[in-house]
Length: 325
Image 1 (cartoon, rainbow, N blue to C red):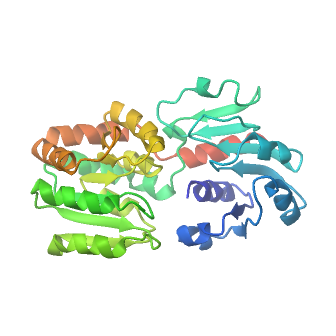
Image 2: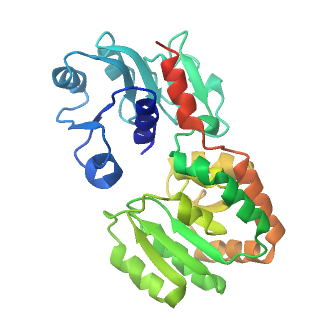
Image 3: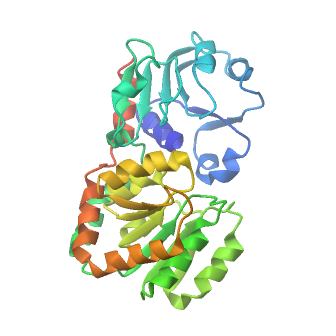
């Protein structure tokens, strides 16, 4: 999704954009298939991927964008010459890259994390100011922040922990909301390919008319604006929630997510569970009750979140790409 956002921002500046993706990506991200960009499914391994791209696009490209946790300097070096410039999107800072521009949207990561990992002269775009969000979030920001300031109570919760949610953290979140004892409206968002639809629907039945399930939502800003609290994952959707000033309870299922969750908690934008092991249902339920009983704390979390990201990052990154030519 973040590459699609960047491609759209580049296209708005006159670029022609093409995608080389895994065969499952078009199914997992329907918006990609619906986009105007040309898509090619990669039929090569890491060692032959550069040659495969050269065979598909023999004329080369002005800018290669690499966003892949399993790719690094080896692929990028093999694409030098075929691509005039290379932009890498990374949020781990744990491997070397051969690039001219590197984007790391992570909150709190310093440029020094890439010392010795990128070439001299590589420009670094660091932090959520450069987060690749769809324009809908910046457009909704003013109204969302105004709604947060005018909210006196916690009356609606959004549960969205990823397109597929393979561990069914959605189900855990629904149980925690139920255990909190609050009479709130509940909105759940899942991707069409999520494996636990039936279990989630069973969990929602306990809330009756106060619950709804949305599948393959394109306008995420709408549901996020309409609620007072989100229960979600510490992925790229964190920047969407921050842009709209939406306080979040984070359910952390991996070490990678922990690294993303910790700075959000330190900034006062979120509270996280699962960073030290299993996610305790009772602890999540108590956190929901705490926010419901303290509107000032809920509002403060929203303001802290809004200070993290303004939603204009995609155009900033596209402008930086333009400046290289």
